[in-house]
Length: 278
Ligand code: GTP
Ligand code: MG
Image 1: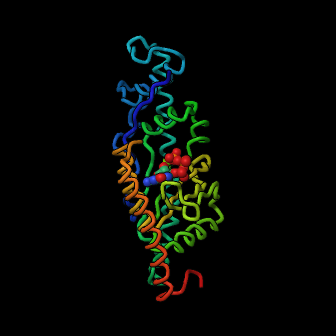
Image 2 (image 1 turned 180 degrees about the vertical axis):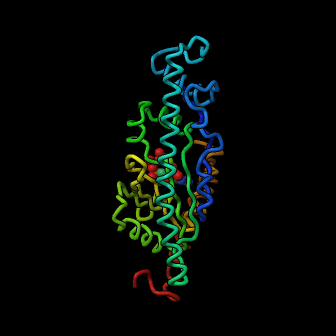
Image 3 (image 1 turned 45 degrees about the vertical axis):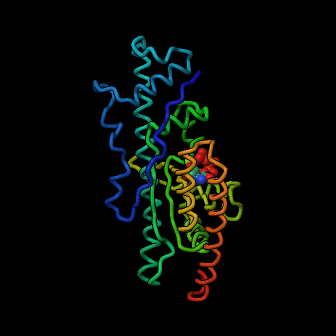
C-alpha cells in the first residue's frame, strides 16, 4: 500500500503587490541547494524514497536496506521537483506582473482599481508529492504536470462581482494567455455555498534555451466570497468530516448573507459609478 504523507494543512497564500515579494516564492528550504552528489539527505528525499519503494512493494519503513539506486532515483526526482517549482514560480511571476500592470493602469488612469488584493501560492515539493500520492498520480514529471494543475496559484480579490468577471475577461483576452479551464462557482455555487471564479490559464515562460508553458490556477472572487471561504476552510480543517449541524447551518446562512451583500453592493455601486466597460 502506498503510504500517504501528510502535507501541511494548507500552503500559505502570500500577498504579492511588489516585485520584491517574488523572492518569497521560493520555499525556505530550497531543494535545489542540495544538489546530487552532495552528502545531505532532506526529508523530501526520504519521502520520495519511501514512495518509490512502496510503489514497488518494498518495505517503506526499512530505509536502512534501501540500495543506492533507490536513493539515486529519489535524488533525481527531488531535483526534478525543484526545477518544476522554479518553472511554476516563474509562471506566477508572469501572471502576477499582468495583474499588477492592470491594477497600476487603473489606479493611474481611472483613479479606481477593480483589484483589491492579490495573493500567490506555490505548492511545495512535499505538498506536491502528497497530492500525487493521494490522487494516484504516477511519480514522473510529465504525469505530475498533466494531472496537477494547481501547483501555481494566484488569488485575486475584488470589491464587486462585476469586477471579478471583468478581470477574468481582460486577462483571457491577452494573446499570450490561454485559458485551459473555467469553473464558475459564482453562477453555480458549490453545494456548501462556496463561490469564486476559477480559471486555469497557461502562460509562456521564456528561458535561456526553451519555453515552458505553465498552467496557473487563478481564483477571482469578491471580498465577501473570500471572507466566507477562509472561514469555511478553517472550520472544515478543524472538524474534517464532522462539522456540527449548527455550525453547518450557520455557515450556510453566512454564504447566503455574503451573496446578498455582493448583490446589494453591486446595486449601490451602479448608483455611483457606471458598470465596467460602460
Ligand atoms: P483541488 O484538487 O482541491 O484543487 O480541487 P479541484 O481540482 O476540484 O478544483 P476546484 O476548482 O474545485 O478547487 C480549487 C481550489 O479552490 C481549492 O484548492 C481551494 O483553494 C478552493 N476551493 C474549492 N472549493 C472550496 C470550498 O468548498 N471551500 C473553500 N474554502 N475553498 C474551496
Ligand atoms: Mg487545489
